[in-house]
Structure formats: C-alpha cells, structure tokens
Amino acid sequence: MTLTSARPSRDIGGTVIPNLSVPQLYERALRDDEGMLAADGPLVVRTGAHTGRSPKDKFIVAEPSSHDKIWWGPVNSEISEEHYDRLRARLLEYLADKQLYAQDLYIGAHEDHQRSLRVYTESAWASIFARNLFRRPSDEELEGFAPNFTIIAVPSFEADPATEGTRSGTAILLHLQRMEIIIVGTAYAGEIKKSAFTVMNYLLPDEGVLPMHSSINVGDDEDDVCIFFGLSGTGKTTLSADPQRKLIGDDEHGWGEGYSFNFEGGCYAKTIRLSPVYEPQIYATTERFGTILENTDLDPETRVLDLDSDRLTENTRAAYPLYFIDNAEPSGVARGARNVIFLTADAFGVLPPLSRLTRDQAAYHFISGYTAKLAGTEVGVKEPSATFSAGFGAPFLPRHPGDYASMLVERLERYDVPVWLINTGWTGGPYGVGQRLNIAHTRSMVHAVLDGALEGVEMVTDPVFGVAVPRQVPGVPEDELFPRRTWSDPVAYDEAANRLAAMFKANFEAYADGVSEAVRAAGPVPREG
Image (tube, rainbow, N blue to C red; front, side, top):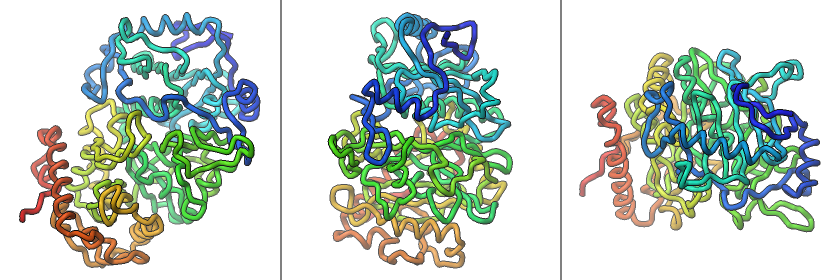
C-alpha cells in the first residue's frame, strides 16, 4: 500500500495500515511494547525526552502563496523550501521499508469550514491519539476519502540541523501551500494536535471565522453559550466540563456569523492531581478503555494509576473522545457567545479572581494573553513563570495577533457580549508562598457570571489593574475577591502588583502602534507610593 500526501503526485513509500479501530490499535501497541494497560483500561504511554511542546523547533516554510500573511518572528520561524525538501526526501528514504499507521479524519464540526486530514503515525498509540482528538468520518465518508492536508509524525527520525536548517533533531514543519505537516524527533502527541490547529488558524480568517484557543459550553437555553479563552493549565478543560451544561469542546473552536463550533472530536486534558470530587467527568475518563494517558505514573505490578505523581512531568495528559463526557454535544456546533471569559493563572497572586472588562480592556487583555507558563507544558519549563501569549495562543497563530483581536472585538460589539477575567492562579502570596485558588470557589464565580447573579452587584475598580471587581459572589468569601486582603503583608502585595503592571506595559509596547489610544490606555497602571 502506498502512503499518499494531500497531493497525490507527491506519493511516498512505506507500508501503511489504515483506519484501524481502537481495540485493534490497542492490541498492536501492547504487542510492540508501546505502552502499558492500566488497571481500569486506559493505555499508558511514555513520550521520552519530550513531555511537552517544542515551540522553538516549529517552522513554517517560506513560500510565495502564504508568505505575506504570516506573522514572522520568534513565534513563526521560517525555513526554506530547499531545506524542507531536503529533509522530506531523507524522511521518505527512511520510511521506505517502515510500517506506518494512518487515520482519515476531519477537523472542524461545521460543514462549511470542515477540512479532511490524514494522520500518519509511527506508533499505534499515536494513531489512537489522532482518532480520539479529531472527528471521525462515517464508513460511507471513508469511501473515496481525500485529505485536504496531511500530517506525518515520525519520532524516531531526526532532522539534521547542519544541512536542513532546523535548530535541533526535533522539527515541526508546516508547508501551507502543499498543506503538509512533518513532525520528527518528538513523540509528544500534542504536536499533532497543535500543528493542525495552526493550519486552521491560518485558513479560517479568510472564511470570516475567528479561530480561538478556547473551550465552549452551553446551558439549557441554546443561546446561553460561553466561550472560555485561556492557555494550557488555566482551566479551559476543567471549567467547561460542567455537568449542568453541555460541552461543545475543551480547546479549539471557531466563531462565525451567529454560530460557533468545535474543531476537534476529543479532549486533551491535564491529569496531574486530578480530583474525582472537583473534576469528576475528566477523572472518569482515566478509568476507561480507549483513553491514552501520556506520562502518567502507575504501579508496575497492579497497574493502578498515581495521578498525583509528577515523577516524569507535571504535564501528564489524557486524550479521549468527546463522547466520554456524558453531556457533550455530539454535533460540536452551538450559537454565538452570550458570555466570554478570559482565563489566567496568575503566578504572582495579585490579579483579582473575578472581574469584568470594558471593551478596550478586553482587547488589551486578549492581545496581552497573560498567564503563568505552568511546569511541563513546554520543554525546559520547570516551575511557573509569568508569560504573555497574544490571543491566549501565540504559538499557534500564524497571522498577526491584531488580525484575530480585531475579529474578536467586532463580534463583542456587534452582539453586545460581556467579557470577564477569571484568575485560577494563586492567592495569599505568589507561587511558593500562597496557594492555588479553590476550584469550588472558581466554579461558583463562573456560575454567577452565567446565571446572571452579578447583575446589580456593586463593582469596585481595582486601583492597579483598573478592572471592575464585584463586592460579592454567591459561595465565595468576600476577602478572596480582593487579593490584597489575602496577603499577610499588604506592602509586599502592592510591590508585586506594581511589578506585574510594569510587565504588562513592557510587553504591550510591541503591539501599541497597531491599536487605538483607548486600548493602549486600558492596561494596568502601577500605583505610586
């Protein structure tokens, strides 16, 4: 059987086993020692040296059809077509006598914006990952299936930096004209997911759709749609998996004209210290056949999981199909947003846990994309540190962040959508001194926003961050709403808040020329004295 890319004229050799079911892939993964069967049925795998993404090893091919649309710089590094072709040719030679697995899948639940993709993987477990994370065609749709783009993931192959223009032996290469993605030198499956997301972020603005690094859920009223923006570790998956609401998806979506939709058919949830009390639906997926658990610890004899262990990484992950969540919406499609929530995990412990933003503040915070980069999410990150990621997903934005921000603000204004900032990070002090905010309190804040419980509640303007903080939220201690009160040393709080405000200001200088004076003035202002 021949391995074909999105362009049939660019066939590559290799024995390919297509579209195996999850049980068939389990058998092969266990036969080939790719992973271990956990006591309750998940497949536990190890990704080796790479337990998170490698953003510095991602490249976009510099070619005429896409060059002028790309936001070139530290996020989107370019590689020449010559280097790409050289690496690709060597990869084809390497694969000539190898076996690969293939899955034919869709990305995008809305039929007007859906793309077909073929994912080739070296391991059976990665084929399960792709089958879990993307959307599965019907048997009828598989007949005559033709991919719009192709992903080829071969961890055992390494790039040659000296002759192929890469930074290391690890490389994630996107050729947007050929619609082909090559991933080598890393077994971390998140690279498959996020490279496909990058392609959608490139394509959909031209179709009038805002691609979003977000989760979405909806209440009993079909107009009660909430979009949660946020980086990894801020709570997108946890807070959107709400038994009182239907889940559209946990990570990647599009917002069109009066509708929103999931890109994926599954979830990729962090499992470190997962709680059966506070995150029961996600916890339950770790006890199901079909779930892939990356780098989760377990007893080698009993095969009982230890979700509290960070022995291998903080970035332990579960990849499971969306239907493992009982109240997931199978269509993956909803109406446009009634509420938008920005999520951040503030490592300094100074941001209010809940606040409402003005339109200008929403634009400012969307472009800033502040959070703490949590340990393990990227290679080399050992402990949380402050970071700014435009659009709450800069590593996946091939276009300038201003393009996405303008689309967001236009929708907020046209549909009169309120924007809330929720901090899921630290209180009572910075990371290492304070403690993580109580997830039960955070859920109460989310429910207060969605249920309209904050209408008419008095708001207090934070003196540094300028956001409107409610004086009371049902189920949340009042002092917790005002972080300065939770610190034993108020002066130390003031100093930390001023430092973070200065960081916001310094970061935003790179974007100031592209926004209005009102947006520039909407950011935090250090308090004197």
